Image (cartoon, helix red, strand yellow):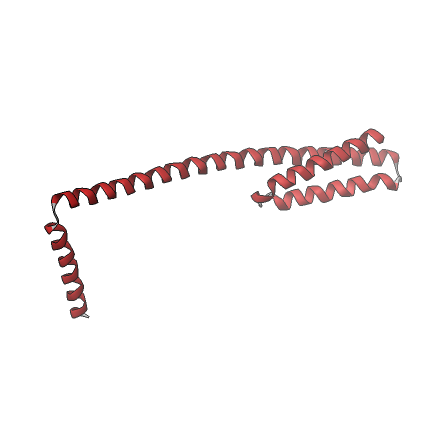
Length: 138
């Protein structure tokens, strides 16, 4: 193992000697190449940071919209239940309440799944439209 390490040390020393013996213009060229690579990586990192911040902001915005939509759905479901209690026994009007409760439960389950936020918002908007029609009908 010591011999192996000594061999690796000799190889590294050889590489160092080779770099020392290079003409100055090759050293400068290597330095410029490394600086260019570093600049490219820094630029890529900066771009990545900006995109991450943008996506984080968009995610928070969508979560706020989703939360407000959930509150609206819950409010509409409560209003519909109150109207159903007043009418007593009209079984056709119970379907929207059951559907709105299903949507609300789906909403709670999907809150953790950020990739489904846009689809959930579309579903909630459609459900909201249907509930408004039912409320207007009632």
